[in-house]
Length: 259
Image (cartoon, rainbow, N blue to C red; front, side):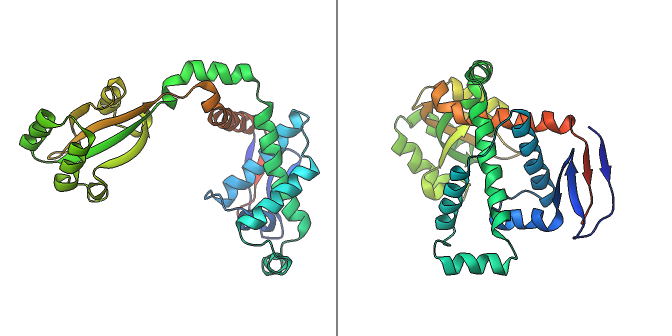
């Protein structure tokens, strides 16, 4: 990948990837249409790389799919009425062709996801199966080791742990929920806790785990979910798509003109 940065202005090309380019104005308006939480520069580059990958794979966006997505978006952002929709376009100086291009990228992205071979998905699932496991957990944080021992001695039912968490947990966000912290993946938990939680059976109380100089954390496992490949299929395709973006970026001549 060749990477160059130059000075630029809003009416100049903002970013170029091989023979594709995107202006500052269009990059900003893309985000006004669909906010992603990413920087304008990162989004703009992703859009161009998506187009390049689709072209490499000889994939095209079906016009009906693009229009359907636009209609769905209009309802989602409450622009289903023509007057509100036109006002949005006028206020943001967005023409219909730019709107179409933005959603065309979304359709191309979906086409790329669908084009990933099932064998690739299966291979990734086999190699990374444990990363898709989730544990539904209760948590209690305390600085009292005597309390920890008392809980481990008496807790046999979820309701009892919830009662202890509500009464004694130092975590103000979860104690009002009886310690409920929802479903967590392995990556969401510290290493020692991760291994113990995912080796446990539903109902078990795990810990204590030292989380700082004075506090300890206990977990109770409510439920364990180990998704089948069909349940993880879409997530795996998203992961493989992100990998294809990184790979294509390394192969692409990119030039950026800062705003």
